[in-house]
Image (cartoon, rainbow, N blue to C red; front, side, top):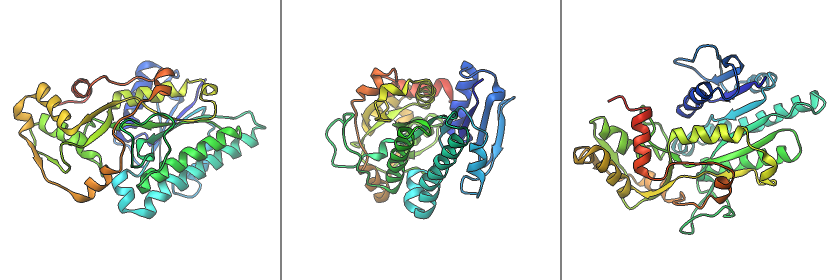
Length: 322
C-alpha cells in the first residue's frame, strides 16, 4: 500500500496532480492520498484533506509523522511575491523545507532506517541566472538572480544532501513556466505568459508588460503533472547523485506565443493584447533562462509538448470554459 502526501495540493498544479493520480490510479485507492494546504474549496471523494500552515509550529512534524511513502512538495511563495515579501519567501520556500527534511530524518532514524520516503520537489528554472548561453545544457551552473530562485536552488541542495545520507530518496524537477494556467492570474512575475493567451480566448483584454522579443521556456500544467508522477516511480540510482533535473519544454518568444494564439483563436483574440511596459516585471524576466537542452530528463522518459500551439490546444482541452 502506497501512502501519498501532496503538500500545496490546493494550488493549480496540486489540483492537476491530484486529478491525474486519481484518474490514472497511479498509487491505488483514493483513501491512500492525503492533501495538505491552507484551505480547500473542494476535494475529490475519498481523499484525506488536511488544512494548516507550513510555518505553524509542529505542523510539518505532524505531516512527517504520518510516514507517507511518496511526498510531492509543491507549496511555494511565487516569484514576484517572494521578491516583494522577503521574509515570507524565505520562511515558506526554504525554512519550511529544512523543517520538513529534518522531520523526515527524525522519522527515518526512529524507524531504525526502514522509513525512507520518495520526495519529489517542484523546483524551477529560476535557479539559473544570466548571462546565459543560447541554450542551457544539463551541466550549466546554478546562479539565480532572484530570492525565489535562490530559495529553490538551496532547497535542491538540501534534498540532494539528505538523499546522499540516506534519510530520504529525493529529486527536484526544475519546471518550465506553466502555461496556460487556468483561473485568475497569481502574483508570479511570469503570470502574463498565461494571461496573454487565457484572457483573449475568454474575450477579455490582457496586459503585456514586456517586449514581444522576450524568449522563455514553457510547458503545460498537464505535462507538469505527468513529470511529477513519472518522477515518483523513477529509479533514482540513475541520477548518480545529481538529483535535480531540467524538465523538457517549448522555447518561444512572446511574438511566437501571439502567433500561436492567432492560429488557434484568430486575429480578434490577438487584438485584445495591450502592451503596457512594467520595468519591475521586465527586470525579473530578464534574469530568467530562455531555452534548454534537457537531455538527461528526456533520456529518463520525461516528455512535454512539441510547440506552443500544442500547449494552447492542451489548455482548450483541459481547462477552457468560455
